[in-house]
Length: 305
Image 1: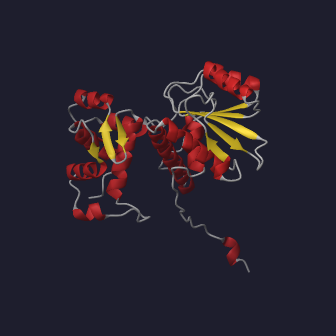
Image 2: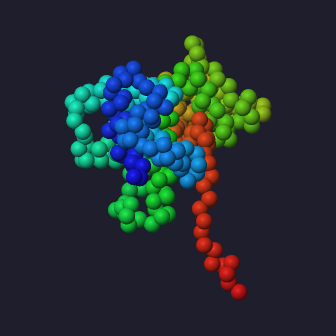
Image 3: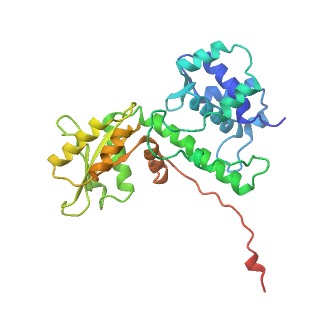
């Protein structure tokens, strides 16, 4: 029997986590879901083509990803999976097997990682790439592209969830690491964290030249709610106090329309919301690792006389 697809693992993952209100280690969920689906030892040993992981663990991980996207579960800490209150209520209100339609909704209905309160003009990647093609009619290149986008969205969701839990001090350090990786500052020492009491609304300073004559001031806020105009005005005032001409405001959440409008009007502040922050972290590999996949393509030029 073929190993169940990831959507078929959603139900056993949900049911097992419902019995563990304090959460369960990922390895426990793997085995519980595999037992529920009666996987053989041979099926459990089967590896992905990349040889990086067992197939069933990979698919169970994607099943949990879908529960997280739906707001039913979370990664309380590294390697620990736990249903949210909403997830526990969902499991209790659906004591029988989920219908095909309910599983389909969980598997494919929550693939947008955009923050619900976001007002940024940026569109989520999934909205930009959806088309009428189905898995059966799309080309291998289209399916590969869709898979890459889906994996980026999953990693972005994990990043935002993790950033929401780190300390404010560590978040400021992450932001400066990212800005350095993006090319700001000749070396990491040119980016200094100055956040803390009495920071005047400035969390970091980037020296763009060796003498420190040109600087960019940074404010990094690990927030859940949207950042409004008053916060951006306060940052603008802090820049004025430093006689600064450049400022970057970075948050894990989003900005209100009024905040975006004010930033545009003063022309010296760049706003980065949670979605864009996650995209930058993926692109510049901050808290993210990547691997190269070789895609063969026929070279007709080689065979020409």
